Each structure stands twice: as structure tokens, then as C-alpha cells.
Length: 323
Image 1 (cartoon, rainbow, N blue to C red):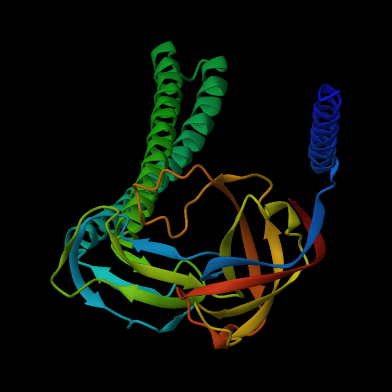
Image 2: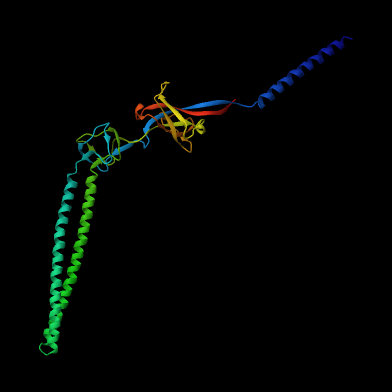
């Protein structure tokens, strides 16, 4: 009779244990089947740099030389083709003068060849007239065979001289074409001794002094083409898909809520690439990719070219999944 209470207690414990296990299994199943709740993302932040829409251009000299004169100052508004600095061009100027002198001499030679040709043509006309007369005299037995042959020789000789004079004139004319090509070349070489503004814009920096020697293609400064300013930024791949052309953006100083100006997204890169802006730490091995985005600034006078700012892009009521 004592065994019955013990058996009842054991069965009760087993029943309780079974209920606990069932509850745990149900909770685990519910957690696996729970749907992720979307979180609203209305703004995407990127660090940007202010640049001209046409991007900053590095200035350089096409050829080496000693700086003879600097014509502008940093911050000047330049027009396309305006001279920035001049290199010493004494040798090139002498070559140009020499070629110009040669072309003048050659033009005189061409004129002389032309006059000689005209003279020979007159001689040919006379010789042909003399031959016609001598042929009539020969038929009338008033002229010997030798005299007739001499007249024919004179016509042939003058004709040969004319052929030679025409060839000489043609050669002289070809030579003047070569000299004109030389003048064009020396003009080009001399032009390379002058650094000019590539377009309308602003001179941002200039590292050049009178007396300094420049090597070929040496950078001497930076130039900002005229036109709108943009905020060039990179958006992390996690939010890159949310950025669309036409979205509005707020430009503000780093770490501040002050609004400098606003802007509009005008370009989004069609692919993701490695970070390039502000990647100062070469030891950063984080494998994250970014999307380049350009935002056109509404009030360019409120920002400085080259400034590092925050670009807060308004992406609207879009959602990203999170647990």
C-alpha cells in the first residue's frame, strides 16, 4: 500500500516536465517564424567635399623653362585663354624670327622665278614667229636648211628653258609652304611657353615664382572652372540603394546641426566601389563599398570650395529590415 503514493508522485513529476518542454519548444518555434519589423529611414548621412561641377583642374606647363613673368594672383577670376604665367622664350622667338625672315626671302625668289618664266614665254613667242617666217623663206629658196634648223633649235631650246623655269617656280612655291609650316611650328612651341586658363573660372592656388624653373608637366596650381558647385559624397552600401536623383539634401558643417545651404541629388553612380574620399587610413581593412553621389548646391556663396561637410540626403519613408 505504501508503493501507490510514490507512484503517483513520480507520474506527477513526469507530467510537469513534459509541459515545460512543450512550452520551450513552442517559444523557440515562434521566435523562428517571427517576421522582421521594418524601421523607417528618412535620412542618409554622408561626408562630402565641396567641388566645382566640372571638378578642380591641376594647372601645368606643357614644356619646361624659367618663369619670366606671373600675370595673375590667387583668387582671380580668369577668362578662357587668359595668360597666367610666361616662361622664357628667347630661343623660340629667335627661331620664329629666323623662319619669318626665310619666308620673306623665299617669296622674293618665287617672284624672280615668275618673272623669268614670263620672259622665257615671250622669247618662245618670238622664236615661234621667227620659225614660221623661216619656213616660208625656206619654201621660197630664200633660206638655207641650216638656218631653218637653227630656228627650230631655238624654239626647242626656249621650250626646255620654260619647262625648267616652271619646275623651279613650283619648287620655290613648295619651299614656301614648308617655311609656313615651320612658322606654325615655332608659333606653337612659343605658345607652349605660356600657361593660360583652360576655361572661365577661379585660380585656387599658384605655386610659381619669377625665376623658378619648371619641368615639363610640373603642376603649378589648381583651377576651378566656372559653374555650379556640388557636394561630392560617398554613401555606404547599406543605404546606397535608397539614393535617387532629385532627392533633396541639407549641407551642414561636420558635427553641427547648422544648415549652410540645401541641394539636390543630380548624379548617382551606377555601381559600388572602394572608398576614395577621406580614406586617409591605409591600414583600414574594412571591406565596405560605397556609391558616389553628387549634390548640386543651391547657394554656392554659402560654402567654400574644398570644404569638408556633412550631406544629409532626404530619402523619404523607405524602410530597412532589422531584427
